Image (spheres, rainbow, N blue to C red):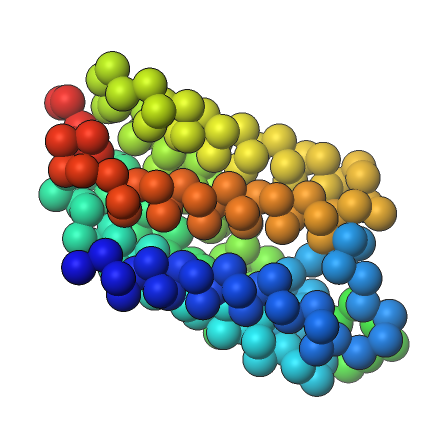
Length: 193
């Protein structure tokens, strides 16, 4: 029963990758984030929102289905990641254009959900890593995911001309982590304690 969540992961990744093509002039995928391609009042923002929605639904399905193989903290944190991803689809950030009107409450809700989502991912993978046992591949993927969730946002705050590219790298790692976790055998993904 891996086909549905894999299809949702593919749809989410494809929509987020294609979203810059629908953006009006002035959007630069190297500099502007995926959230900005889903921003309030921006024509074509529906495609990035669809990407967030598909990703969130895939994660909820994966966490619900694989949860019995994970520790309770891992399951709770990765379920939270899925819910928060849906919230980022529902609440859009402000547009990147400085004079464009926007709803500040919706922007704040988006910012909160996106930040909390990053923490849920980092802590969820940390909980997963601590229970992996001798699974070297799993440990390596967890470590890469944790590093991405912590280091990429820090890099984004200083390398502002590359914020979009950096964030897309972080998303690619998250998509990869969920896809690999889903495709592994029950023995490979089972926690040892």
